[in-house]
Length: 316
Image (cartoon, rainbow, N blue to C red; front, side, top):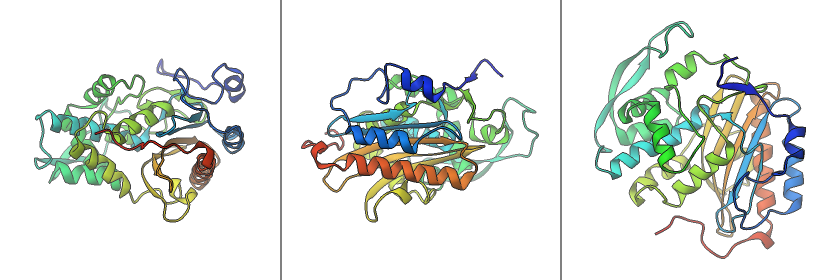
């Protein structure tokens, strides 16, 4: 086990902690209904693998989580931060959405044979097209193109720190992450490389949705792409009523699956959620668990007495 990995905190230890099921270390404006917390605990039992959940009502400030401050593998949910880093550079005048970059195509190599997996340049596409591909279709070659454009993993982590996101981190490009996948079992071990606490993914998506760090145009590029995502139809989407507007980004690696995003409620509120699931017996079971958790969150936040009157949408 590397220094970056540690044994996961048990569910019993978490329940006995002073933070309970709310976002650790964060001020709560309003609490969630007790029934929601109880239902969430019931559906997110970690008997078959660690499960991390965080959700926030942008209007009322009500929030809830399970293992919300424990690190989980981001997998492709990291692509949100990569897109945001590039778009912040567009706003600063360093990059252009119309500039073209080459796709980064993996070259066959043995796992762990090199610190960074070899890649070769492919087709040239505009940054606008690359962001659309990396978010909507989770294209890894487009992602590594954008990652190279901003200066690599350290540049994305630096942008996250500048935005106040303290523990989400990117350590490897996608080609290396995929090639070397399987070193640890995420159901049993916390590997902090390329990880995020669910609470910090919620913080990132909430800030992007509300226009906290990006110009309106750049904000719309990433948020708009999330509404057009075609992956993960059996995850958050499967847990929502038909016709509900939402945007999301999925992630999948060895023995782990995730889905993170925002849901626009019928009464105008916006719920941001991040769901990270490990184990559970197989890929289909992990997706089903994500759908069940999303359904539980939607139904719990839908209670009218917790509806807010102020818009949770982006700031002017």
